[in-house]
Image (cartoon, rainbow, N blue to C red; front, side, top):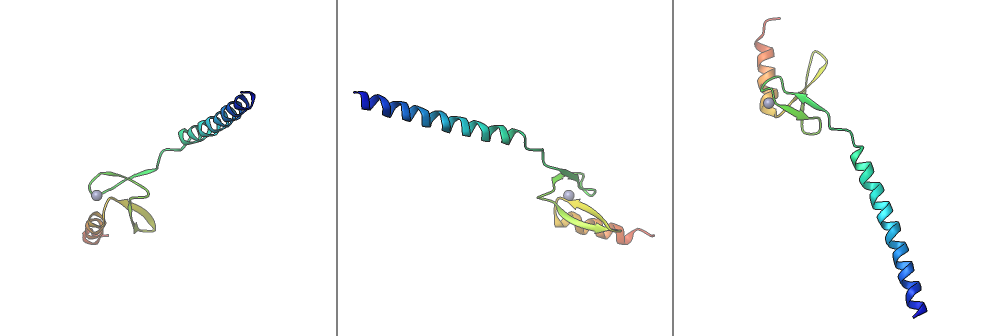
Length: 82
Ligand SMILES: [Zn+2]
């Protein structure tokens, strides 16, 4: 019976360690900064940096929701007299 009790104590100790380490991981997840978003100047939709199609105009980086919007923007810029 004594041996059984030691195994239970060891099991409980491991359980506490696992619980502690998983709680630490959850704490780190909550610290994650919200993803940066950019406004598509063509359709006005907000897009995450990871999903955006990036176009360039006068050296500036412009974020679009899709290639269609990027093409529309380039067309608009080309038709606008400087
Ligand atoms: Zn768009």
